[in-house]
Amino acid sequence: DVKVTQSSRYLVKRTGEKVFLECVQDMDHENMFWYRQDPGLGLRLIYFSYDVKMKEKGDIPEGYSVSREKKERFSLILESASTNQTSMYLCASTSQINEKLFFGSGTQLSVL
Amino acid sequence: GQNIDQPTEMTATEGAIVQINCTYQTSGFNGLFWYQQHAGEAPTFLSYNVLDGLEEKGRFSSFLSRSKGYSYLLLKELQMKDSASYLCAVRDPLTGANNLFFGTGTRLTVIP
Image 1 (tube, rainbow over the protein chains, first blue to last red):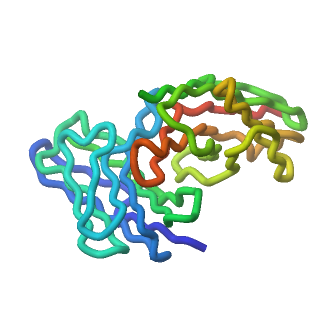
Image 2: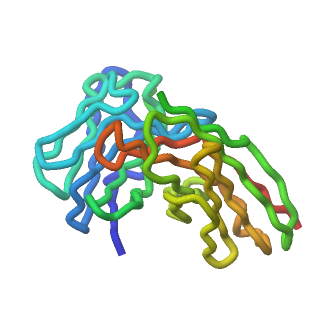
């Protein structure tokens, strides 16, 4: 089975802190994604990557950046966390030919 | 732009049948997905439709009409464990690598 692992299940940070969310997949997938999920808004795409060192903005990239130095790892960075970034963050991956996304178990981030 | 609509909440009785509808308007179309998400957990893949018609998989079936921009997920012989959110998502090939756009989800409550 494909495994997508997110480093933290729950995270509490202070406003202005730099936050790193890590995601690792073990199936050699080319494509990786970061979503945030908020009540009433569903999943919204922040950034995605289709290859090492490649990244594309999603629908809501403001306030975020990403890093993909290795194929299996996709990091989401909040340069200066703000309270409106309190959310559930979900990482996902898929191969070029596989249709479905495989999700990690999510990181619930609270910014105080 | 992309717009995906589905009801916010539904309630159904154990053993019954429930149909969850999804309508979409997207720039392009290359498949519609249904995901199940239990509270506090990651979404898991249920079904994929790219051609018109009904796809059946055990107690779950999914239907697609591309001309109408419409899909539904049919759950038969409902069980208590089917209480979850059901996410409709459309893949739009005009927007990047396997990118999915999600609806806000339908929270289904199964009652005894």
